[in-house]
Image (tube, rainbow, N blue to C red; front, side, top):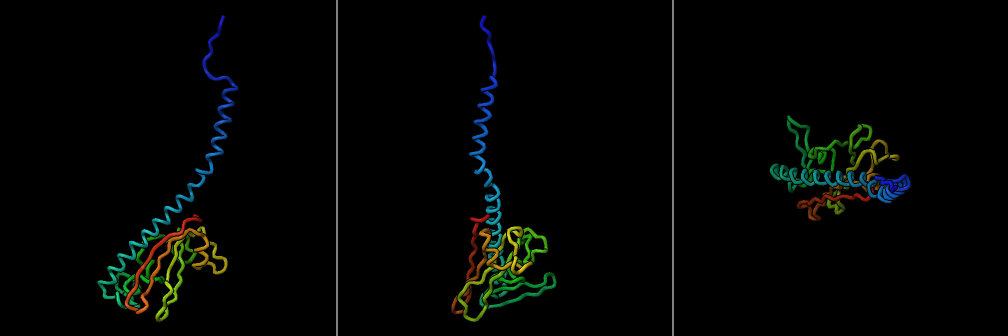
Length: 185
């Protein structure tokens, strides 16, 4: 008499589990890269915020008549002042950080999600861009200058958004650029 069986044998079950294990090991590196993708996406979002803040700030600077002034500073009753450089949010504490809404501080002990640093070479007739860089606070150790990271330390993470101001050589105005580096995220 022939016996009908339904289902898998134990050997078939073990073979299927081994095959699934091999597939998981091969596919795992692809899925382990999710943190990089998430951080890179956030940095792109920070760059978009910087770009929007630059455009909105520039609009405010033009309305105030600051587009041809190397430096301008506002002090009003409802805020503690904002700095402009040729009508754009300046690369200073009272510049871009006042225009962009990020949980960020240049001091790593503040416990913010992001940190930033400034490279400024404001001198008459300068042609080197001034800029500030933003990155995740947990990526920067700022060993040499703790708790204040330098632009070099932030750029070494290869995971940052950068806001630049290029002044024209004739001091008639400036232009801005925003870009990202995400290979180290």
